[in-house]
Length: 400
View (cartoon, rainbow, N blue to C red):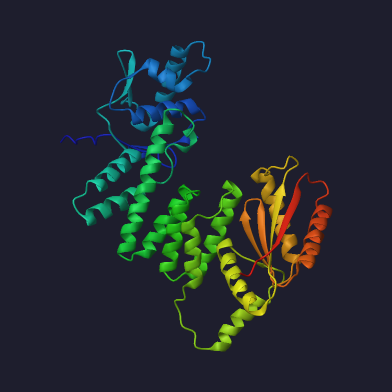
């Protein structure tokens, strides 16, 4: 009795790494140190629907690099690639064929690629006939996207446009899937989707905002606030930007939402006392700073007390903003100094990557000037070798 031999199948996972499953074996990037070998193999996998001329492969692999014999180098590289693949095919099937001065994928070998499946699912979601089908397509697409296309080859000219397209499709899919999950109040799943998305693209503020909203909708206000603080600090440090209006409005929502009832006043007072006992000036987000400012202005109109606002800025020797790598360390040191030297009733907030804004509710102008001068002197004493300078402005608020 003749037993039909199972047809060889290949599965290539190119999103977030480079793994190829051939039959029952797995081929990974660790099996060869040759970057050009993997570059060649990946290019053929993603262009397996056509013949690829030798000239095209030479351009992909070497471009403008000086190569004395590119045709010979390509033949040698192709030989090494086939040798690497041979143990996975049993030695009797060539995955890459030569044909009329070109190379091509063996059309008799079935091959699937995760990046192509992801692209197909995103397109299917756009043309889906109903919301449930669209939801399922987006779910599958987002789950399939493990990271950028061929991350170790992200700078290759042929990879860049494909990687950018898949990345944009993924972000769009996450946004649309999150909106559909929010409509269905599936906030746990929404949080999982967004948590992975911010790992893929940590600098997209809209993804962070969606994740925070999912936490708030689950009643995890403390986690949402902690995440907000970490995110805004990361954006300050890496991009030098303040939170967007969307993130700032979410902060206000977190501060205003209360999902539980507490009838024991002593419990509430205990929590407030713990916060009040923290030493030093009060440090907060700029959105919350503005709310405190509004409250202090109202109180001062009634009592006649003075309020002063100070703006402290760090400059380099040329009077410009220092590079973020230097600026972040300086701002950390300045914040520590401000927190410890100002009073508990004073308020500090980061206004920009190189600035802190301070509220001095009870000081007159002379006292406020003395305080700021002492802080400047101590900063220079603690950072004698630094080429950075600090400058402050102090203004009394007009209580009109």
